[in-house]
Structures are given as structure tokens and as C-alpha cells.
Length: 149
Image (cartoon, rainbow, N blue to C red; front, side, top):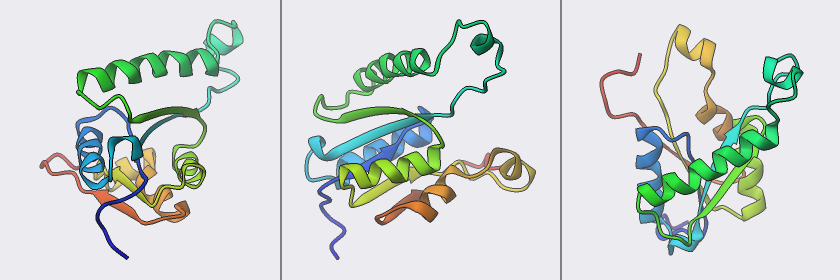
């Protein structure tokens, strides 16, 4: 199995500096920018959230706002127009793995925030869920600063 170049690369994006680095690596490892898929997954709203109860906020409205932000993010970062931007609502780890199957990804590149201890217990690990459910190899990029606690 050759590591380079990859035909279809999927990069989950949470708009952090770490995910910006993952996008950069994805563009380097893909055959072409058109083979790079960036995905952001929003957790669904709770039915008892005030905005939901009053009818002001819906998952689709949130998704549309994030799509607009994603397009602006791509423009600001100077990403090629051929890169695919996807916004979904669901469980981030599971939805990333599901989309990897749908788009035929042969590599997922995910940034890790490096949380451990109680912070990891409270926040979970999206990277770990992706690793467990991915239909293809996953490259986890370690956080490269000292604030991993």
C-alpha cells in the first residue's frame, strides 16, 4: 500500500489551528485538491434547548450558518475552490466514518487536541471514535504545543 499520493482524502475540521494543519497535510497528500473533502459535524440540538422550544433555532438553520462560515473559512485560508466542503448534523466520530465510506476516502486525516485525564473523560475523543469506526486508514496528527492538558 502506497502512502502517496492519495486519491480521496477526508479531513474533519473544527476550525481550530490543529485542524488547519490537518487541512494543509491533506492537500499535500492528495493527488489533487478536488480529491480533498473537508467535513464539519454539528451535534444535534437537544429538544429541551430554549431555542428549540421557542422555535427560533433548528438544526438546519445552524447547518446553513456553519456552511456560510465554512465557505468563508476556506476563502480566508486560501483553499482551492475544488475542495469539497460538507456540513452534517450527528455524532462527529460516526458521521466522519460514514462520510468516508460515502466519498470513497482512502485516508482520513484528523487532528487531535491531546486532552487527557478528566478533560478527556468530560469531552470524549472524536479522534478515537473515528479510529474505531473508519473504513480506511486514519492519520492522527498530534498537537505540537505544550498545552495538552
